[in-house]
Image 1 (spheres, rainbow, N blue to C red):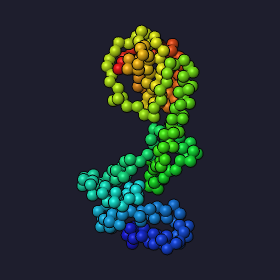
Image 2: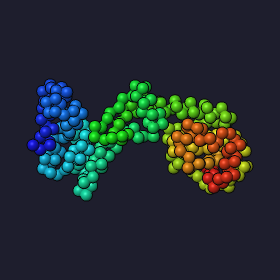
Image 3: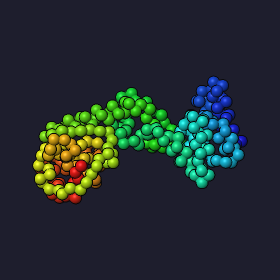
Image 4: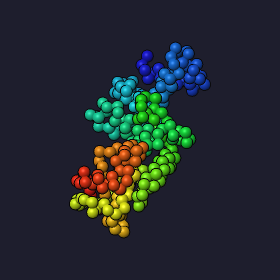
Amino acid sequence: MHPADEFGAFRALADGGMPPADIAARFGVTETVVQKRLKLARVSPKLLDAFRRGEMTLQHVMAFTVSDDHAAQERVWSNLPKWQKGDPSLIRGCLSEHEITASDHRVRFVTLKAYEKAGGAIRRNLFSDGEDGVFILDETLLESLVAKKLQRVAQAVGKEGWQWVEIRSSYDDRGCQLRHARSGRAALKCSPSPFLGFGGPRMFTRPCVSPSECVLSSYKTMTYAGLVEWHFAGQFRNVTDVLAFADAYPDVLRTF
């Protein structure tokens, strides 16, 4: 029996009202195996026919299970160049391109456990292990949890005496027009403020009125996790530490 026919046999029993546990007992397998067979059976019939003809492997069929949209499955297979069809991971990537997985930096920041505790729904891919097999279904809730956690950190850092603190869930360096500037204590004498955001810490100071006249310094080797959990990983506890950092690493200063 071809594997695709086996999938179909499992599905016929399930569609007939037999519970997965009974199907598992009948075939001498676990319920997890039954669930996987049923998932494979729900891949587009056109693609299962291609599987029967030997045009794709079982790994390809497993990759298609990341989505239940038959039209999307067929479109991805049709649009992939022949030389790329040999890599099932490309199929999985195309079908989940706009989805949020547990490997997303926002999920890692608030933790998957906290997201689920807050009532966040998830979807698991039976054929993917680890974070990439867990999909976040409530982005609004996720963003809310990120904002709340960042705000708590911002409040704690603000108590250190910073003039202002800005939080964002993401940061794009391309959004800033940067040019090199000479470093030194003079550039950091006015009240500096930390920028808390993903992608690494950013330090702003306000020697003038508007942020456009501030100095930006990036500690590129510091992880964001360190920033959040240890407030700049213990490097910037106060203004004195910032000034010491400016002396030690003058080349990282930028102005915009």
